Length: 229
Image (cartoon, rainbow, N blue to C red; front, side, top):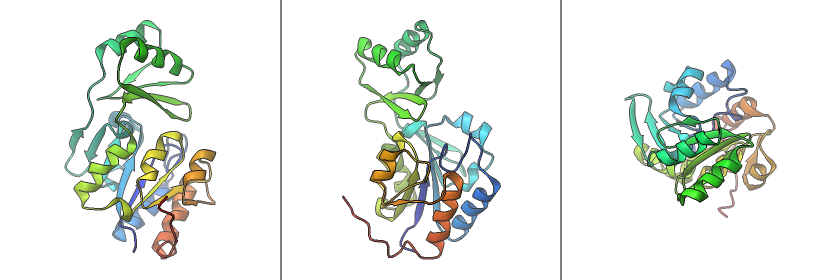
């Protein structure tokens, strides 16, 4: 195969309403059994993912918190790549009544609270940015994206970005999709994600990922011309 790894988003890509269908799990198993290395690249915090998805050991690496942490499901080793959330930011958002989930680095909420998050970041003079994932809102250090988390995960596996297929659906997926040799958008992806992708699946969410894996294992993607720009 031309490609050695498949890096996939979770929500809206392999999962629908947080649930991965059994047929999608089977397709991922087929890809793994064919020698493909699997990476999950998600905005979720690890405890939330573990409580939601029972098949994390399918993946060779999990990039969580939108690039802030990398987890090895086999060794259970966790690498934190970003600084922890400033206590002042958490306190400022709590005073504003913003519903929060706080991870190793990420501070997460939902729309329309992005205005309060941005205001708190400005008032505190923090070098942080706000990232959107459809209705979800995440605040992270400005140099943290799914792409920055994917890089050390691929390096640990000895796989180049050029040999990696990335698949996603939302705003926060664009950074890591651009870093992959082949960028794929599932049919339900946002228009901006479809526009920058090399390939758009006919199927949505898990059905699109199954379609992608079927085409990959059949060798249909090996000769696909990809514009590096």
